[in-house]
Length: 230
Image (tube, rainbow, N blue to C red; front, side):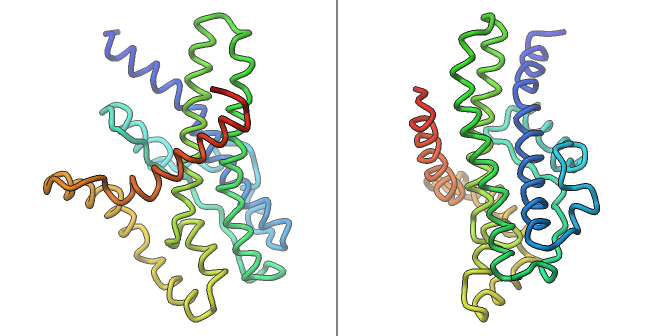
């Protein structure tokens, strides 16, 4: 095995656990809150579970992140299978939609904080194991914070879009909800097309870096302070 391949395998090994935990907890949180608020759809389908295989999307959770890692992309992007929620079955559909949507990003922030706290036990491990665990924890913090911030962008079908639909006046919320069929196309433009066009034209940071990078950096700093890591 060549050094480059060994390095890629090692790098992948420090991302696999953070990715699986992040997407599993995110989706399970959606399903659990929906169940607590009156909709048993996800529970009946076994999606209120910490088993990552119930949430993995073969393309979004495995193939795409693997390709980005292999080609040393400057970012990771992917998705899990969305948890099915029947908002009409919630006790209060508008309020419930907001709470169900918030559950995923809040779960990611909680996991980022726990990962930061675990840095305090890294020094108790053997040197090689400590380095590997520290990389996993570092990646977990970064990944979960970015997932939380990215998912709170006010664009359906992201969680932030559903929060906005639930909080806006009904007419405005309905108008925003009508963007959902085009949401993935808009995200692809934000993630891939606009940055590429900006680089070609010599423009500054792409919109997504500004919208996600700044808040993510700030939240990561707050988590480090709260967990007392430096």
